[in-house]
Length: 319
Image (cartoon, rainbow, N blue to C red; front, side, top):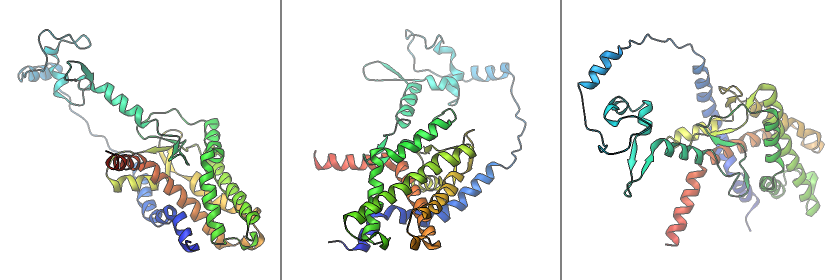
């Protein structure tokens, strides 16, 4: 039978990895936020006359991958579309066709839209047991998050059946480690751990995702980066506990997380035994709140890679 210390380490392994990284991430995240507020000096850009640009393009002809009898694309003659083919960031470059073996044409723009749609619809529950109602792609353009939407998100994270997994894990860790001796031992004692853990999670969710974000006009959704190297994405995801988006779409200090988690830890003193109302217990609860949220952001960011790794392992095991 695993020891109490082993069970505690297993249940809170993500939080224990996340908390030591918070100090490193917070410094760089805050510097990045301050950098965005610095004034930017714009330099004049010299433009060329249309006649000069056209003459330059006409002087450098090249063959286009179109047949003479191929239909026109959006009413444009391929023989005169060299300007759009020359610049990859021009509107015409988004319409370049790639021919499949069957002779059909697939628009690159359509592919980009399809890929974007796939990223904006993550699963509502990770592994079926972790709430994931607030995750969207960082490239998604969404309207400001309304008060009702923030309330619904906090309610889903608190009362969806998938939220019971974390409640049970925290309660089990507290029971095994005898975190609150006043609760005693046995089935009744474990039920006390359960409802205290549920109360802790529910209060924190509503403060972090609803009350303070409404007052501070903060967007509580998690915008997954989904690209870049591991270090960049890890720093970004864990740093979301300190930096979030405002309702206007700009980066701002995540007061909902930082202040809300602290307020939830303080409110818990109202329903815990008198002997547990100490500064040390407050700091412990606050650190666990921040650590669990940082770990959840990390898992949400790398969830596609995690599932792909499991799929490849399953395919290799069952060819």
